[in-house]
Length: 390
Length: 188
Image (cartoon, rainbow over all chains, first blue to last red; front, side, top):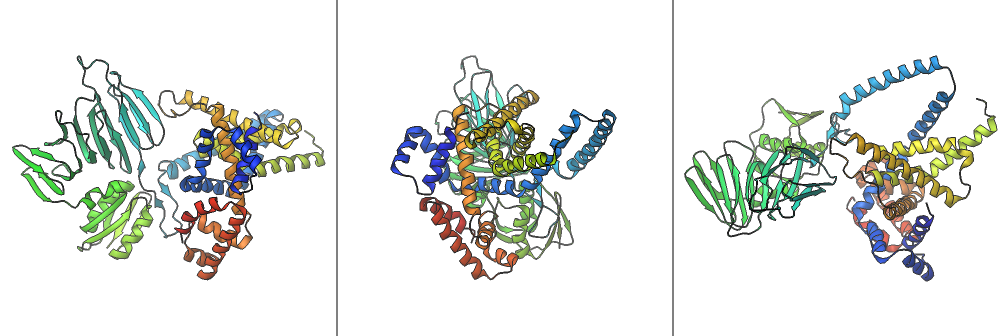
């Protein structure tokens, strides 16, 4: 490997110190073409990235002593391997296996089963729970399942349509080979509890899925009928000739080009809040047209129109919990999906209603701190069980 | 195996010195290739075990040594990526398990070196004010929490933070410090 990168790093350090002479600046520009130079320097303009990397470095510095001990141990093991009594090594190996085995078993039981459980240092709970994150599973038309997190994926469907995924979103692109003899191919995007994901459909529409939700959609760019379970926010690409349709149980939402949120967590009813455009809700023999700012609640009996609280309906997408006239049970129900926790109630719960917002980026303990103050309830966290005491 | 004490002693210190100087930035570098913080630390530790064994054959000159360490880590990461590819062939995971191009490697080395330099600049602030600055800046504690933890008044914490900031301004360019300020201050 050449020594160029170290020299460049030195020049950049000088630049960050404001100590770079004109000739050195010229040299830096000479060593790196403009595109590369800008790409490298831009990293230091993004405070989030810098903070993240400094956090990692801080953590490494803190655990340096441990790391050195590990190196010494590994080195000792290797030296022992070279010479030494075979009998002795065998016994040592057996003991090692037992220790590692037991430790792994114990570790798996306490921690690995859940990476979302972390230590709580601030609020005095047994442990804390991390908020949800970008995660989902994509099922391709041939049934192949792909785990999606923040890593990259790339696939081509049988009909030539491509799907790329990165950073919490998958994007479909490309045309199918022969639209004439088309085979209807469907993909399914499944978002678990404590997850959220975005998909840009082949027709250009965008859908954001909330935790514990599922969307089944065609992958050919011409069909526009999708099936939803759970909650999603839709931004539909306009196309007058070919309406977009969302199916939820018995309800059909027909769309001509618009933004709206559908909450269909409950089997017996769903609510659709319209931000802009126009949609038609139909269930059984009932039909209603929604105008922006309206919410349609669909049950077996029919459709009820109400004034929508858009801030509330879209809060999840904006990264918040939003409560207004909600009982504590409703509040915690909402939160249990995002933290993937089970809530156990002990004693009687107050009937008063709560209002307010809590960022979804908070850990469980942080969020509970706010609820504790307003509700007067006490909470206990035990792994992923939340006990609420009235 | 007999190793004369003085020689043994020398070996320990030199590898340990190398470790102290390079461990953190090599981990940073490896995690940029692997996208996995834990695996990165493992790999760098293994590299140091090997370095220890080859103590006598290491390049003597600083830049050559540095470049030797980075390329050892690079090849260890490549091996890991190849291994992951085989292991996860059927699981469709680790799809980013591609070997980065030379250009990318060069940029990652630059970033690892520069980031560590920035970290050190903060680290080298005078003790008291560095501690307060780090608690607020790197660990995200609020003024009141720092005051409580260190048993100081809130005003002392505030003034130490200010002092740290102006000292940093002397060490780093004003542009960089002004970039850091928003996320120093929002934690106040």
